[in-house]
Length: 370
Image (tube, rainbow, N blue to C red):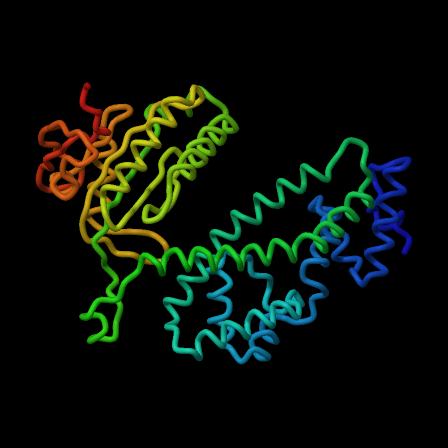
């Protein structure tokens, strides 16, 4: 191929021009069309084409052909792809590989096993969101590790492809391993009641202690700091949270400057929050933390929690003082004095909550003076 004539070497000279030519030759010889090479150059992703091919191999199917071979409705399959957060190429574009077909056939097996479509799409949505974040972190880490000053395009492309071929199977095994570990943790905390056995249906609502904790003054910090500083602050909060969370307490999600925790019983949740507040107070890089905790029915759906209990805990958090925890009467009554000191915080009118909520401040019990 006369790459000079295509314009794909424009703007380059010396070794950079030679490296581009070598990379184009390798990719074209490997079956990449001129049109795809032109698109990749225009989008500044030519160096990433080898890793893309290493990840999924050669595309051979359109969406319609994929659906036909997998014996799935095309509209449903496209809906599933959207649920997983994946982009959809034009219907007539050859964009899907043998691995895509294998995945589509697994989806068909899930449907035939009796898993309802809404539940299956929910699983796909949660997995897609979680793994998109995982992929982004992995991509950035390896990108920084493999990129160095003066490296040419063909060499960088080769490094990316070799790293993917060597390390991706390890990462895939780790994802499967972590899924099994988390499933085991949840199953150990789970129970099936006699009512559920009689009805043959698991309840969607469960009594849970739910906590929100956020960093005081994070909004003001955002006005005074750049995005990287805010990202560092959020990462530090997550790191500290991971150090204090242990079964039966679990981290439900992070929301920028806040974390949401839950547990079947409130005492271990309060203990974890007090440890978290202590850790944050000792970290000079972070503003103080505050928290709110409520107990009651929660709807568990797609890895998240919903309901009035969640709303009350979030509103209590917003009213708490720095380095303190506000809880409801029910939390106070369930936990009692064992291991904790309590002080009345009065009635709180909470946004979106019809009746005032009587609140208590929870502290770690101090040893009696000798």
